[in-house]
Image 1: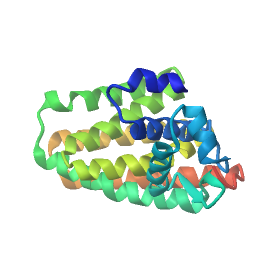
Image 2 (image 1 turned 120 degrees about the vertical axis):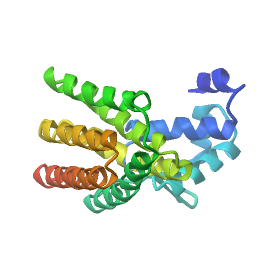
Image 3 (image 1 turned 135 degrees about the horizontal axis):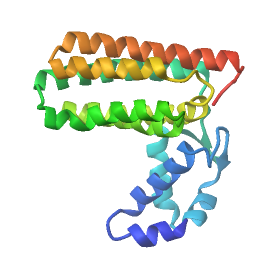
Length: 228
């Protein structure tokens, strides 16, 4: 891992480097739920001192990805069904506001083209049963929706909350039904945004987020997953 810091040292602070690496380890389940490590161990693996590691861990704790335990270092927090429901409720509120803001900006077709491309990519991925590519296209749609809305503070909040849901999404993605309905929902949201109908777009996105939340809850119940 220390090579990462040599490559990025000129552009990123040690704290930022440690934060990004640790967050990546957590989101990709290299540090699975319940994983514990002491600060000196983490610092040694990253090839940095304990100070930037400590600051990075404080940021990760604020994002609800870990908990800091006195004299025991950090522990990666698992997600239970209640956590996933709460995360989706927050995302619903934030993303619906982003839909409204984007619609009211009345963006040109050129500005919206990347979003349209992401919807087409979702359909194309479904045609060949490539769920990983579908997930990448869906993530692109969400990222563009929030960034094009133009509210930087909202974008930061969405990014933090979506990071909390990332592990659960990655695990449940291949356990859920083929996302045909979700893809149609994204297409309908985009059509309403294109038409400048913020009320219709916002309502459809609200419905879509609730549908996704219900699917995740059903997967957790069906497969009796205590946590993710």
